[in-house]
Amino acid sequence: MIVVENVAVATVDADDTYHADGHVVVGDDGRIAAVGAGPAPAGEGRRVDGAGCLITPGLINSHHHLYQWATRGLAVDETLFGWLKTLYPIWGRLDAEVVGAAAGAGLGWLALSGCTTSMDHHYVFPRDGGDVLEAEIEAARRIGLRFHPTRGSMDLGQRDGGLPPDNIVESTDDALAATESAIDRWHDPSPGSMLRIAVAPCSPFSVTERLMSEAAALARRKGVRLHTHLAETDDEEDFCRERFGCTPTEYAERLGWLGDDVWLAHGVHLDDSAIAKLGATGTGVAHCPSSNARLGAGAARVRELLDHRVPVGLGVDGSASQEASHLGEELRQALYTARTRGGPGALNAREALRLGTMGGARCLGRSDELGSIEAGKLADLVVWRLDGLGHAGIDDRLAALVFGPAAPVELALVGGRPVVERGELVHADAAVLANEAARAHRRLLDRTGN
Image 1 (cartoon, rainbow, N blue to C red):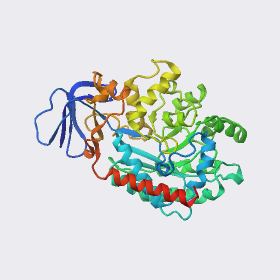
Image 2 (image 1 turned 120 degrees about the horizontal axis):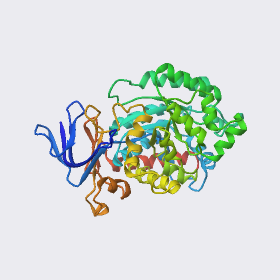
Image 3 (image 1 turned 60 degrees about the vertical axis):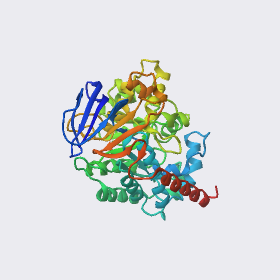
Image 4 (image 1 turned 90 degrees about the horizontal axis):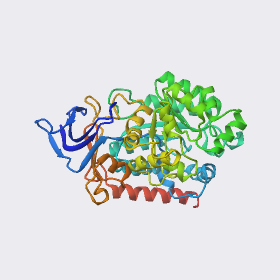
């Protein structure tokens, strides 16, 4: 058992209950036993003094591409399509060793940024690259994070009018077979699961209509969730209108890709009709404000999405389109991006934290177990230290977390087990992860003459 006491508590429950001085008790079953104001009840177990700290639900990363840690800092002044055309040839030389090192670094950094659950959207499977999905799953086990990798796919190459080079796309049949195999091998639907698989064809400009529709049918037959990129850029809008005669959202609807088992990455260019459709169907959106800004894609209409009851989570997106990849900082970035669009009333600190916690849990289909501090839920928790120089003088600790600089993680628990303590990874050495990632980056670039 672990008892965190003398701590400010942001529960993110349905009433946004906040205790300026409270406690959280974690049972030996890895679930939250109690939460409340004032001193913790007497009892056995490790007691953590949270003076100067805020405890929140662990942050949930709802969109990422971990392999991209190996190609950070490239094509820094390109739009999405130009960036992809630069990086596709490099990604075509990925292998399991590179992906494992990139995933280890990316997940370790996410843990240090307050993330306790992350998805990953992996859609590049070089023919001689080995088992890259297994490599990132093993990396998540090494760090100790709860993991929702998706088996992505691309089958629309340049010769058929798509964006990716032909040598890095799969055949439709191969992609579907490999996706089903990944579900059968890895997906764990049990309560408290540490590993769940979703189905994730990449995007309208890299996937055929057949793959999109049959992937949706496969996911529903297997009882897993669906994920893809949608409405990220104006270029994508133009592509869909020219090729399919409709908007990206209309295309998704036509192929059965709207529903409460679907969450979409980005959703930047959504008109009023599209937002209404997402709200009516319960389709989620992974909001990636820093990546959208880095690529100049635009700012998602988060206030309108929330007003239509669309599940909205936060994602750092791929490390090559958002080199910081710090999920804690995305709370502030989301708030600032919303206010740039709609003024100071567009998003507040509690709403920003909800995006990064319960919003992500809803996108991943885990809101019954994750996303808030309530008795019976999984003890995925983060204790943020907010009494240092960077936060001195900000009395409201929730405001300090969201408006202030990146807060150090004093303690992060996944299922009641520590994965970060006093700003250090528990199960891995950050310096080793960094060295492995740097070597993988250099090996990959050497293979492509960069």
